[in-house]
Image (tube, rainbow, N blue to C red; front, top):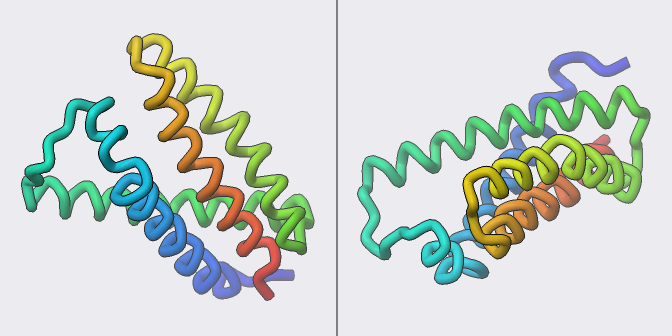
Length: 134
C-alpha cells in the first residue's frame, strides 16, 4: 500500500518534466507556427509570462497527481503500461474535449495538432515515469 508521501517526489518530478516538455514544445519546436496560429507577438509581457508559467506548473502538478493516482489504481507498474494508460486518458479526457473546443471556436487544425500533440507526449512520458517509479 502506498502512503501519501510516496506520491510527492514522483508528482514533483513528473510536473517538472511536463513543464520542460512544454517549454521545449512551445518555446523551441513549434514556437513560430504556434505564435502565428494564436496571433502572438515576439514581445512578452514579463508579468503575464510569469503568471502563465506559474499556472502551467500548478496545472502540471495537479495533472501529475491525478495521473499517478489513476496509474496506481489500475496497477500500472511498468513504463510501457503507464505510457499506454496515459495515452488512453489523453485521448478521452484531453484530445476529444480539446477537439470539440477547437471546432466550436473555429480554430485551425494545425493549432489543435500542436496543442493536443504536446499533451499526448507529456502524458505518455510522465505516465511511463510515474508507473515505473519505485
